[in-house]
Length: 290
Length: 290
Image (cartoon, rainbow over all chains, first blue to last red; front, side, top):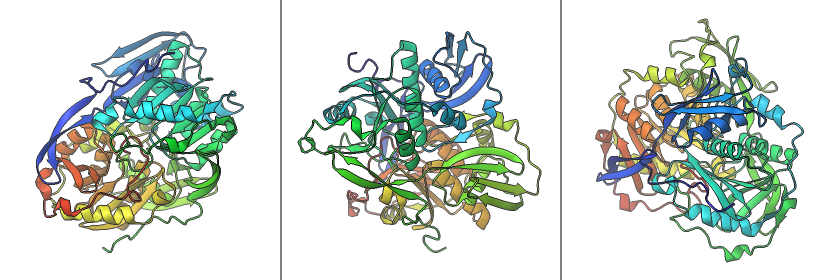
């Protein structure tokens, strides 16, 4: 597939807004900030969740969220996805009748940027998952970092946003951003479902932390390699090892750390040939690692 | 109050773990990563939510979460907070009978690092909230940044974690960290409730983004000033202006931006006297602004 089938559109009027304030000297200043909108996701007759999102790709977000929650099955036939921008609602309709009334009573507050996950069920879904063989060249990691960090993005325009990129070899294919990093992942899951794209030969790159939920979602998407500029949680590492996922974190400039699935990594690049990130492309100002 | 009544304990054995992996050259390396544990919060007989947390201060987390969800009222008499480390459960008992069965069917997936928020209710709770008068000296912001960023923390030890600090003038009072930045805020809300501390003369500092939910929680805690190293969302700015909150973001080195409540700010510091952050204390590797 060619590079950047989908990429951020920093100039899209609905995604950022100019706001006027004052800087540290008291001087008036105008900056761009990202939008944050409510989007309520329905599955057939049932209200499932209200997500806070920048609002692009609501259909992919709805499909991906439902898939990653195990409410929509890979085998499901989706008969319609209806988005009403005014009502801030998206309805996913399936041939199969669905009822998650009980499920919706359970809730898990996950680390980082996820919400309303039915976590127990996600854990169960992980049982017996073994990710396929794959190779990861370190030269790909450096190429992906460079292409992704220098691509025009809402992050570079307004900050305060996460990015997730579905990649193949050294090619970024689908680059999604959102105020919640899990929305960005879900939008990619929704795109893969719609396009019938397999995760087996892909690499998922995220700007967010490698928490238990991020690892679970990546595994459920069938992607054997997860890479991030940010750090790890212990549980994220444990789960990655359990499902045989290659987990790469703290990927900045020439450095990175692999804490799971090292056997897939082919060290074909000379790290010292890759300079540290310059200030413009260093993703600044975050506090925790995502 | 004196500085750092509560501060992170980077050496606490249950909060981080050493994990072995490989670096970019293939060399074996050992790094410390933060723990991420499930903690299920009960209010009286009712299971409310399961939070992913590093696991310190479970009582404060439970109280603060319930307060910020409007399930526990400032007027409530808490008769017991029981934590069972083995069962990963914390039970908050109140004199008043509580029943949030219906409420728990609603869910909002919020931006950044929150979960399972009953967002509609939080918005309602905000109606008519006007935060008290307060002054904010820019010299305090610089002093707070310096003290917080150089304090020993799990972030400096292991990364991948957010911090939130309740401050008074130029003094950090309570410094909480957690894998979810909203857990860190909730732990502070729980501490304020337990200690009967008012937010009226306080400043809340967070490493996370200034999203709608962060602004709502800060307003419900009665704190008129919210400052962050990270960026803004448009809705966060709107809500801050609605409740009269001073909102400071992108606070790094000598720079910051104020997008709401500028009238409280007293420019008593010379920004140029404050150097840029050095690499050690710059909070590295985050992708989005928190």
